[in-house]
Image (tube, rainbow, N blue to C red; front, top):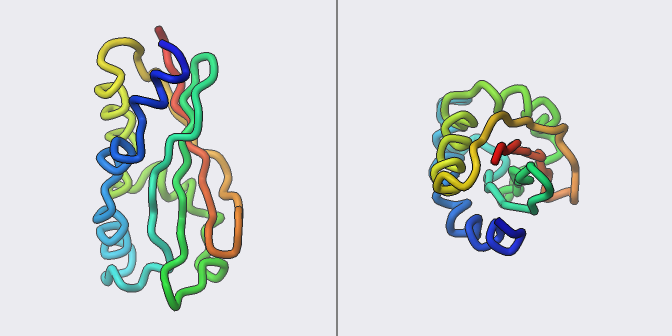
Length: 131
């Protein structure tokens, strides 16, 4: 499968199906008891594929009137990897389904939070494949 094929598979629509917008509110409702307490929206984005790795990122985009820098996003990778609403294992299973038996997801890893701008932080999400 070529890089173009992976890019064609993991469009913004596919990423939205893997991590629907409503999941952000569900996450904050579970965390704080109120979905409006969250300082950011979470989106999944496909970045690239190299060798046997699919590179995605979770984008944390500041909500209007909220402070992303004040929201302690640096501890999120550890929270994301085990939080049932984020459901990384479920996302990986869905990625494997999208691959349609052309590859198998053997493991995954979340990287450290990066501040790409004051309004957007990202968490790298790598999925390792076996052909």
